[in-house]
Length: 364
Ligand SMILES: NC(=O)c1ccc[n+]([C@@H]2O[C@H](COP(=O)([O-])OP(=O)(O)OC[C@H]3O[C@@H](n4cnc5c(N)ncnc54)[C@H](OP(=O)(O)O)[C@@H]3O)[C@@H](O)[C@H]2O)c1
Image 1 (tube, rainbow, N blue to C red):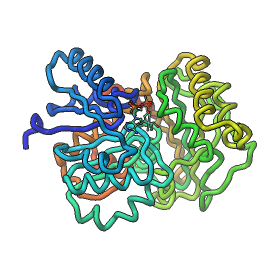
Image 2: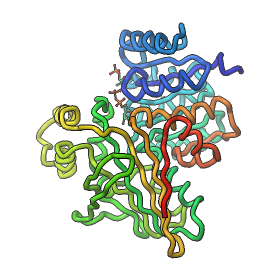
Image 3: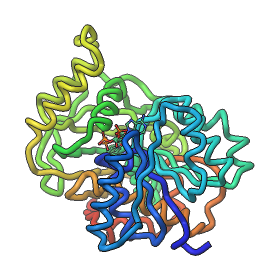
Image 4: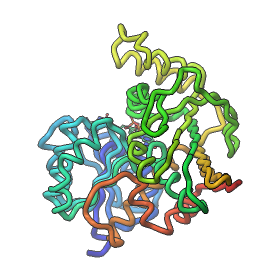
């Protein structure tokens, strides 16, 4: 099938991340791009705007899909080559969507974390591997790129890497309502590191870090991401940690309250609203994303930093690169895995990130 006759559906397609992915895909592929969400009206307006910006007619269109409705979620991959998920999905919605993708031989990419996602994919493994569909999990920037960067660093290091430390920071005042919900939900993932196994770190185990790429300095706490769970064993590491900076001092305080449950008497929506307001009010420039990985191998150390000046563009880039690879088939077998597992199979992945505006710094 020619790429021009292919179609990609983006769930959450007119939200902040969905729009960034749609814009970039419009530049990378020739097929149609369908923006889905609960409001057909909002989708249409965004599709018209994207068409205008691209100087095209009918490349972008809209569709009403509510992922809270199992039947709509199961049916939405019909006629699509790839479904990209840029909105939160419940456990049952993930199951419905995976079934729909398999039934319609569609590929799947998501950028939205869910602590139970891997478990769901593991339970559907046999069906997935017998299907024609490929499933790429957490294919945004953060989560997404840390798992890939650690693998890349290991490949680039000479000697046996036993210890990797990673640092990450992202800053944007435009994080959407759905993105804020996911950040708050991830509060419990703070305070973890790998030392022969994933363990709780001490409360005072924080780092003060000056970030490259002009992203300033910040206190960082060790965090756990689902994509990192099996990584230390896969890379035969003895120690692994990912220290992450917050967005601004007020949202950092709200995250601490979230983690300790102090504000539990308020509804999740009220806490989300408080975080959302604090994010918009107190997050100041510089904006962007930076991830650094440092390795130690046979007494020698090595460092790679990658970054981008726009968080949402950075989020869209890995998802759009993977979408393009899936549409070109590119020898990727049916199955599921995190971004790092798929991207490590593509030797040109670092070049592709750079072509789309990521910068790299290398050091000893
Ligand atoms: N990995 C990364 O690097 C990364 C970076 C940024 C964001 N993200 C993730 O991307 C997701 C979206 O974040 P965002 O900042 O773009 O949020 P957002 O601007 O609020 O966008 C969310 C979108 O989802 C749609 N949506 C909400 N409920 C829906 C439902 N039941 N059915 C269908 N569509 C629904 C919304 O439209 P309606 O409300 O009109 O339906 C909206 O278009 C979040 O899960 C976030 O964690 C990941």
